[in-house]
Image (cartoon, rainbow, N blue to C red; front, top):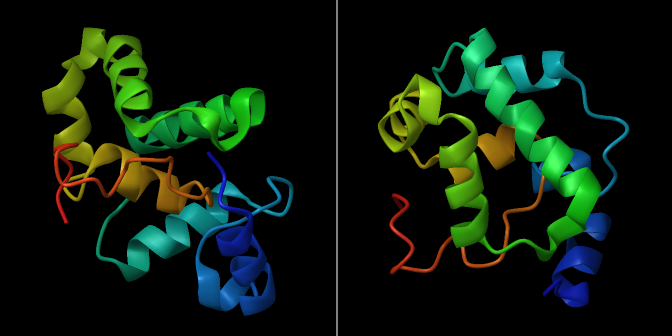
Length: 120
């Protein structure tokens, strides 16, 4: 469930501070590539396919999909390339948390839950 207080804090913080976007429109793949480069990660077409998939899910469902469900659908979508292992090889800090960051999206509910399995 979206925490309106957190969203309001993010809006007041400004885009340079918050790191995650509320509006999908101002984001570009170039921004994602630059953010990743600053973090020491070179985004490939495979990385960007995952980022695009997360943005499409967010555009379709908003922030209502729980991180566990999103991880399952992401693994199913990329099962042909290796699923879970493939995703963590690309995004070692967690495919949901790290890819959402580069996608300019708020982290889905449950992403930082210690039982979820993403790295912290």
